[in-house]
Length: 200
Image 1 (tube, helix red, strand yellow):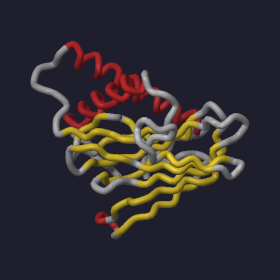
Image 2 (image 1 turned 60 degrees about the vertical axis):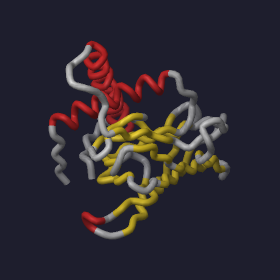
Image 3 (image 1 turned 45 degrees about the horizontal axis):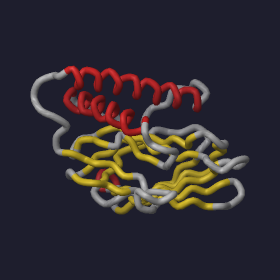
Image 4 (image 1 turned 30 degrees about the vertical axis):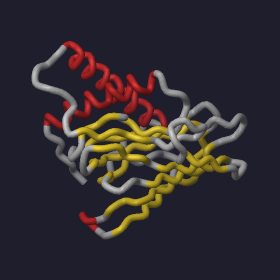
């Protein structure tokens, strides 16, 4: 499936990725969807990262529940995981409601990482639910409030990410965004054993 993203969308993606890096720097190890701030009504690349925190165990299953209005278009294949998508409708009208990844083997101290192209339908806060299963059968539900031990991942979709001119802050944000995208690509490349894969 070929997806064409116009230049303004790419610029927005870079700025949003930079915002995600800034927010992530001060965040603790929680399940998270990034970028934390993005544009509504724009197709963008998002990442879901779920940490394996229990000592001596591995993450073997992730169930990702998608909020209404957050339209997932396609997924980046992940080596070592099997993906099952639950959706309503069919073809171009299909709406992804839940995604289950199984067969993983992610050890303590590492993140399970999944990426997808998606588009928030309008500005606002989107709250996701993540259920994480460990190799001993224990389950962590990332669905609580922000102050809880297992908060639900959230993102903020905005109708605009800034004004007219190109400021120094914008340039720095673009550079940071490029770095973030490159690091994400390197992580995917190393996990897949160096085999190039396209978005399904």
